Image (cartoon, rainbow, N blue to C red; front, side, top):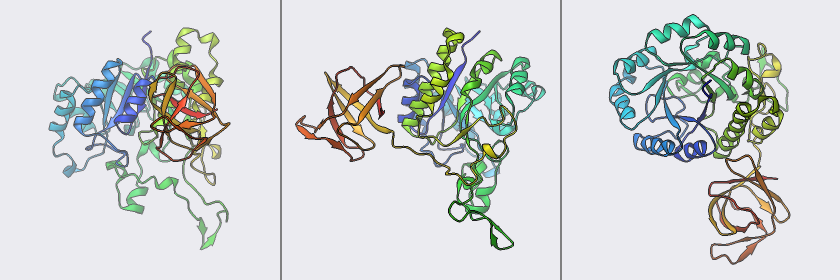
Length: 396
């Protein structure tokens, strides 16, 4: 059995590198054109080429989203853009438009064509139809149960990709027009303003019926499907997708690292797999509340945020190791820490290291302070253990 792929998101080159270093087999990114998530940093072709070169050093692949639902005036320059992606070594494009998918197939490039979840592929006959068009992989709709995914993946003649973690759209497979009405931005052409996550007063006949102290939200909880990983692997799913191109460096490192070790642990010895341990690790990210989506049953009120806080941002992310010099590490501060705080250092490997913080040094390595509270400040810290560049630091 070929090992399942772990597919991670990245909104810029820095996060792409972190995703690869922390264990992603492939990373999906968006270019400046023909892509959704216009609020993500997104990549120029030159940046994509740098990302491909970096990923190949680790044996990883780069997928590029070409997933807008285009109008006639959106298609200019498409063929040249696809040629550019092929030229710089992109492995696959993820298309939502069947025209774009068919066009890429007809161009006979080296690019694989993957069909986006926006096409709502929900049955085996549909996936087989897409194979006849020359498409290599289908990203299933999020609206399927785990049993339905097992049925499709076990019988389909095409590669199947399924979501394992990340944001869930409150509309059907991302087809939403809230932003069109509320911000005059087309969500299906890259302009989603995430209006479902805004806070609303709810009125009925001009009477406010929402709680006075907590406003109403239409947003879904994020998907967390780590507990279904064994079933997805046994069902011959080709790729597990983490959603979140707009997520932070710390989020990507934490979530990718957790799923990497979870997958590796399953292949090493499924009988010894401690899924709860990895779930705890993954939820150390600055996550929104999570649920199992449609995997167990149709979501009820427990799968929606409604009056809950839509973001659960923590200050666990304390810093990043920029450089190592002997037993000292240059740290980029991200959130406050001070004397007697426990700092936990982690990298791509499973092992972590804890330090009782006492003091830090300035650039000249002269004793400076016992508190670090300036974001992006760079300080030196003495360490009794060995770390590497791009290790991250969280609260212990």
